[in-house]
Image 1: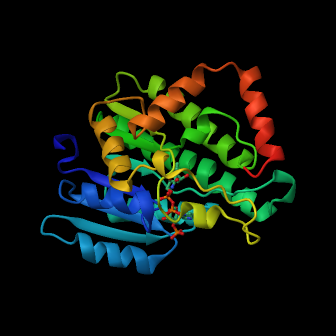
Image 2: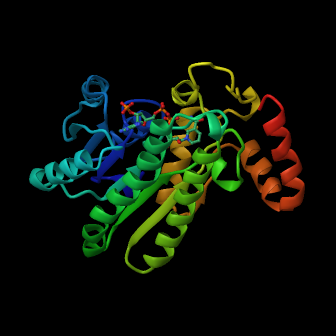
Length: 266
Ligand SMILES: NC(=O)c1ccc[n+]([C@@H]2O[C@H](COP(=O)([O-])OP(=O)(O)OC[C@H]3O[C@@H](n4cnc5c(N)ncnc54)[C@H](OP(=O)(O)O)[C@@H]3O)[C@@H](O)[C@H]2O)c1
């Protein structure tokens, strides 16, 4: 964890699940951590938990679906004088169910948080990282980025964006001292599936337990990938094997499987 010694990390979606765990694992090494999410009470509780001499924790309540609040976050950051050396774009949300039956406001929130906020924060913070000649961006995508997913069509497409954007940005930044890593978890026990479920609960897609990777392992895999300057990380050996095989299956065969997902329960 030498790489993270004395770093200043900004973590979005730090009020729960994977983001909260990123803060826990970075706290023993970082100099400062900026926690961002909407639920300030959760951020304040995490700040109390992380408290140790030599670590400064800032909490910032922001709805990342709201451009005005993102700009306010950036202004507060500039005013605080903190220079972010590690940006973890983790905040995200999903939606389980047919696209034609989806709530537009939820679809828009997915596009705004999963794509726009991640891109805006990277755009705003990158020039300082490049000027410093050192730093890292870790974008949290999903294995859903690797293939189109009926009943999670928009979510999977947003994660395809995250992965594509991260890979391209990494290539652009080669030689600058700034790395970009994309983390592609499979199913993890967090609040994610609860928030992705629709009120009817009809299209919930519980993942088989065997594929689930503990949140601690997801985060340690992501941080190890940053430390080793890896482009992409898929936590959990079984998920990794299944996704590697899936990526080798021709699309015409995948379409047969994908069409079954529309007809069947998921
Ligand atoms: N869990 C999984 O199975 C899984 C699998 C693959 C990828 N992922 C990805 O992992 C990331 C973290 O998800 P998680 O599993 O930790 O889910 P989670 O427990 O539901 O956490 C999501 C986090 O995102 C924040 N967030 C959501 N909407 C926001 C908004 N409008 N403004 C600001 N923050 C917002 C939430 O904070 P507030 O509600 O307090 O704002 C929360 O801290 C996501 O990008 C997700 O797509 C998860």
